[in-house]
Length: 64
Image: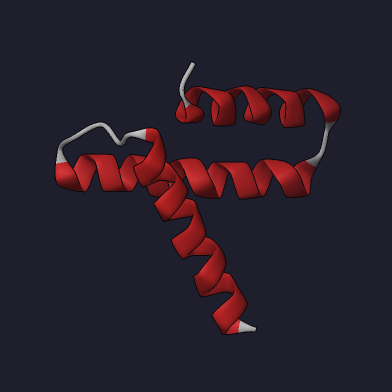
């Protein structure tokens, strides 16, 4: 299972446990991944997903 599959499994776990904050973050990550895949018309590899997540983390840190 790739990284995207692991993220989806984490989303299911967060839903079952009722962890709303974690669920929001995971949904945000998946939305960004899906948007990039749609824009580029390719399926992202694991290293591209990691780059996307790192970019999102940097944006959040810079906004503080």
